Length: 456
Ligand code: PMP
Image (cartoon, rainbow, N blue to C red; front, side, top):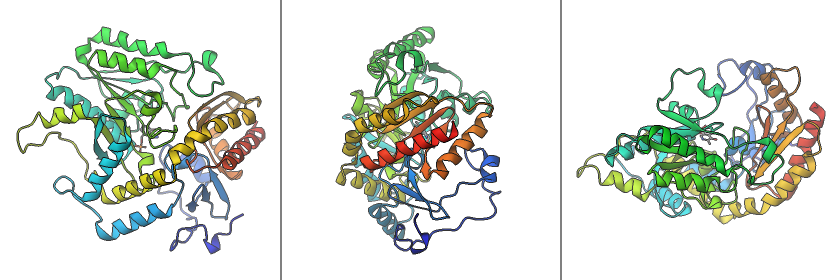
């Protein structure tokens, strides 16, 4: 057990916080607030692959925070870059001034992206990145003289954040049903999961590429000249870890290109090494017209998101407006925020200097093997899906308990076993920092097995 009092595991100059008594005011996001507040799971510090609890326990971070701390926690080069930036240029109004590091980070991101994706628009989260990409898609067709292309196509079980654009193209019932009519003119492709055909596949399943052909049906129904863009997560993450069937993304690309429809990859989870390459687009050899990123860009330290757009899209806007005119009426006060840019640059340097994308690629086989050897035989486990260093484990619903209570019980069980693991619906998701060693992977799956045996 770690003793917090000496704080050796904390970055220099910080002290562990104690837990507050009043938990009422903070309305927690996507949380069962009452259940949580009855039995709070607090964390008060973090370093590398661990979080720390107020009672001095060290919790293995099996989810990289929320799929974002890819470089691990409180990494010194990132901490120092943020501190230095905060002391030298705290804010820059990018609607009217440039500051050098924003241009530098944009160039670095473009240099890691697939060829042809050269221009970066900054936002502050994945949700804002998604809204930005959808707006760019609609505006792009308009400036190209095809303003009739207004329809957007998402996918069942897609998660694209919490903005109105994102929940409209997203395919999660609970994210949609409370919020009125949402965006009009949206269709959804079928999701790609079929347990009968795909259960216990390591990596991308063989079955399911043909599901991309549904796009042809949607296009035939409405006319290609009404469709602006298709948005998908290359690997659906928060709705259960669904790797794309082999060949599926290539087919989507072929059909979108054939009909002049833009293809957007939401890589908020998959970007920056999670699947062993900088972007999932490279793993699958498919280049979309735009990539949405967030999370890993700063390893979760400072909020940042954005869109990487093709030269064709960018040039379409540049050529559309008169000299000195604004080309795209869109942006955020904090687009290209200096602290986020400093954090991003330092994070990208850590990824490069420590070879963390390569480490993820190297760990992938062992990760999948460990998932199967520890968990596949448990009665409670119904399916295991793996891809990069991500695993989704479907479990039999805990009987007699409403989902929210079962969910809280599982989270409690993991927390009490010194592990941070995410449970959504009936899927347990693991997505640790890319800094994990084989011994951490082993410890994580052993702990998961213990916990599943205890709750079942
Ligand atoms: N898209 C995807 C694929 C995501 O996984 C998420 C967040 N989990 C988002 C968008 C939204 O990102 P944020 O929570 O930063 O708005």
